Length: 239
Image 1 (cartoon, helix red, strand yellow):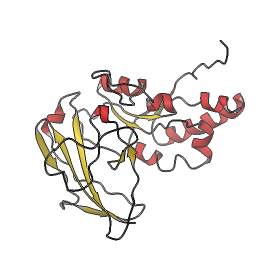
Image 2 (cartoon, rainbow, N blue to C red; image 1 turned 45 degrees about the vertical axis):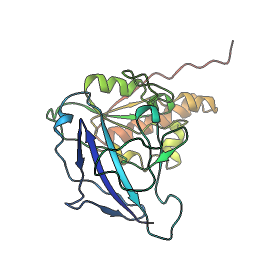
Image 3 (cartoon, one colour; image 1 turned 90 degrees about the vertical axis):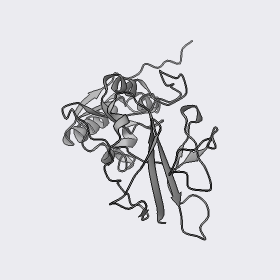
Image 4 (cartoon, rainbow, N blue to C red; image 1 turned 90 degrees about the horizontal axis):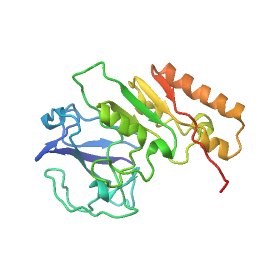
C-alpha cells in the first residue's frame, strides 16, 4: 500500500525540513522509494557531529497496522517513536522508547563530501559486522556499531552497513537475501565482508564456503568495489 512521508533533520539546535522535488511530502507506492532533495546542513561539515532524522508517515484511512517496513529503535541511542501528531517541524522529546519498539525511518542517508577521493565503505556480513550488542564508543550506550563501523567512523569514511545478524554467505548468494540490500551499496568504493563462520556452523564444507565467498567477492568487485574479507572468526565447543 502507498504511504505518505514527511521528513526533517535536526542538527545542533536547528531543524532542517527535507523536500521531495520541492514538495514537503511524498507519496511512496508499494515497493517504491523516494529520495529527498540535497539539503545544506552546515553543522554536518564537522567530523563526528551527531544528528537526528525525524520521519512522519501516514497511510490511507481505513487501513490498520503498519503498511511499511519497520526497524528496531534503540532508546539508549536516542531513538524512539511517536504515534499521533506530526513532530517533524520542530524537534520534540520525549519519544516513546523501550525494548522491542519498531519505527519507520530512512533506509539510507546520502551526503556530498568535499573530499571526493575518500573511501565509501560497504559493510556486508553477519551479526559481528552488524554490531549486535555493541556499544557507542563515546557514550557507552547500545548502538549496534561493530568494529568495521568504528574503523570508518574514526577515519571519517562514509559507509553503508547492510550486514544482518544470522546471515550466511550461502544465503546471501542463493535466497535473494541480497537483492534489496546490494543496491544500497551502489557507489561504494570499498567493501568489508566477514562471511564464513555461520556457514561452517551449519555444516557447509570449506569448498562450498569458498565458492560462495568467491561469488560474493566477484559481485562486489563487479560493482566497482575493492573487497576486503576478514579472517573467519574462531569458534569452539570445548571448555
